[in-house]
Length: 172
Image (cartoon, rainbow, N blue to C red; front, side, top):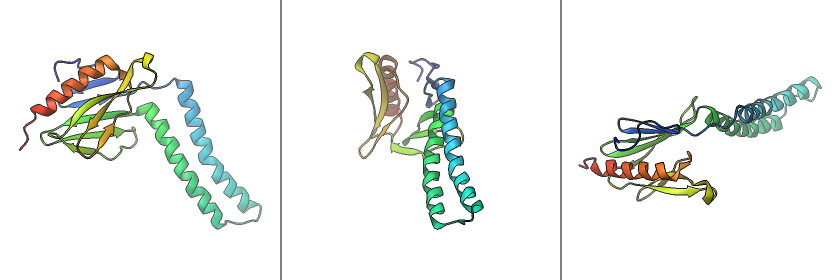
């Protein structure tokens, strides 16, 4: 991957791994997201405590409410962590290409595809005048779309270089 820049604001390359890091939103926006996450997690706990203290007891509906709220909290936490620590990694190995999203505190499941049957493409996103796009990893049976938006010019160079590297890897 020596033909493209080894360091940029939103991506870096080390060996056979390219890491994309989205531009985080402002501190104000991130703090609002964290406040909403914390408040949303406290509300069901306070409701249950209030119900028990008022003599109504702990009902089965409280379990359902806490469970549904837990799913919402999980989603909000993922958004919060992605906007603070999020990064995506593509690793090209001999037989496979691995993609993972790292949220800082936890990682998504690694998605894998065969090197010989993979192509890197660009998908324009947003308004045309913004000139932004994302990399898409295409294979015979799956499509992996990265979340990090970058200007189309560097993306074109990155996708071209990744396609060259993927084709150069020996396929037994």
